[in-house]
Length: 465
Length: 159
View (cartoon, rainbow over the protein chains, first blue to last red):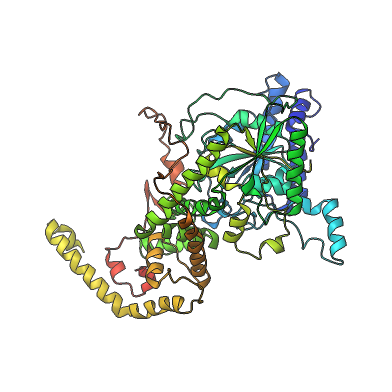
């Protein structure tokens, strides 16, 4: 039952094959069994069982709230959840209990979803491995798959079973692992530079990044206000469409959500790609791309072509600068967004009481890890008066050029771009930590962040399915 | 301090300026030089590949602005690398290109009507703070209190 899709389980619930409480208990038990993955920071057992009970009452009366009623879901721990600790995997917010739900969380709950818990991430969503949070790294469920274990046995003998586990990618690694391990049917992540799509790729699940402005950011603890979007992780595209349908739409509490009404939609049962024009950006053929990913990319393009789609090469000329541009804009906005953590109104507060400056500085030193502090310092450097024009404004201009690249391609008749998400498959943790966070993010976000800067939607599906 | 508070504003400003000069003098006496020496140590031990953009003055300035300290040589090196990385943008020709602040720049930002529809949640909000007195968040004293002036340690002063 737990390996089914959201739609299948929803049908099972409606037909009475399983009750919401039974489903919830199965998921809770699997969460306990897979605790070693470290996918969850908080498991909201009592809350989940209560929600499941209420869902069951609704089903008995024939008043189900829809496809999400009774469905176990998980939420990344940078979304505010009322009365449930929200930490962003940081010492700064350990013990912080928000007094409200993020809009997307509220929407899920209003549709009857059952909240299993808050998932692990890189601290403040900064990273591409889900290895830099204060609660420890997240392990990729595929590290324990038969295929990977066979592969490892061939390479090294007598090795400790657990020493070479694979990373999940990040920063929404906990959410991706939770979905991949069957402990929930959908999870919320956040996507600023690829943080939903990267772990989705490494964990073999669907990662969907909506267009900027489609889904509310109210309650999502912000990283980069002009690029953040809530992301959706599910086991199939149809499930992602169901969840998107529930979440999309204008939110008066987030003035950056577009006001156009969102028309309800369903995906066609059979995809007709005859009229589709697919673009392959030539600049994405990076030398660092692994041969395996390249071959899957090629296979996917050939598949579309054989089904009647038009597949052409296109150019996004500023691709090589987009990661640099992202780096400047991201650190600058982070420097601003992290300024709110001063220990006064919420979050960690140190014991120093000499002066406000001393207290702020010590609180922030104790509360943030090196990665966060590094980005704050870089951001402040780029925003200094003498650097503002040459770095921040320059990056904003380059951002326009990157966004224009996409607009030009889509205006020339291309409907969708087909690209890889990551340079290679998931790497072992011991390999990943050989480089620092900034270097890894620059390498791993190479395909994903351009779309965040241009604001477009992006969906990732595992090639091996 | 109470005499300062009750004096007319012009006198108060003058007294404040005198106080600030005394504070700085005291800071120098307390070993400002040794602290600057430590900072210089950061950059003098630099490896030859660094651009030298991150001088002691820049470090001091950034730490004060960000209220986050570098804490180590590695952190300074990381900033240097980040700057070198960002310098690649110079190669892009952006003549005549307007900066892009938001991808939704062609739309009007939504403003809701100016009516009070929620609030009255002071108690809930105060619950998350460590130090609270009645409905106030309690902050340590700012720069102009006697406690601050009489402190001896420079790092505690965060000058």
